[in-house]
Image 1 (cartoon, helix red, strand yellow):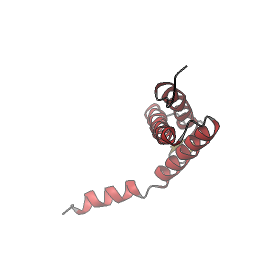
Image 2: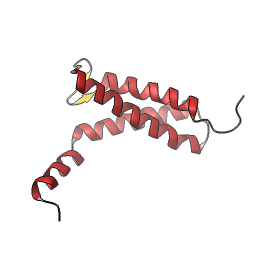
Image 3: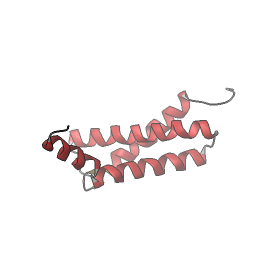
Image 4: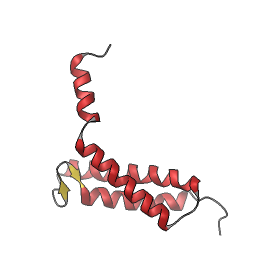
Length: 101
């Protein structure tokens, strides 16, 4: 059984509005990028993974550095978006489906 304080901490993280806003924004960026550069259903999962990871990295960097510009509550909107876009572009370069030219 999980001790009470660990359960409270886990629920605080799982129910954090900042976490869900970050996930929602990363999913929106990933889906828009996938629609724009459509390469099939197999690439969609990779794009979602890259967008989530990129937003998380941008969020982490912004939080560690203390960057306050473009922040909504606890969400580092500017750096999270930059991280998602960067990792989506890099991810598409490495994870290609179909024939390579």
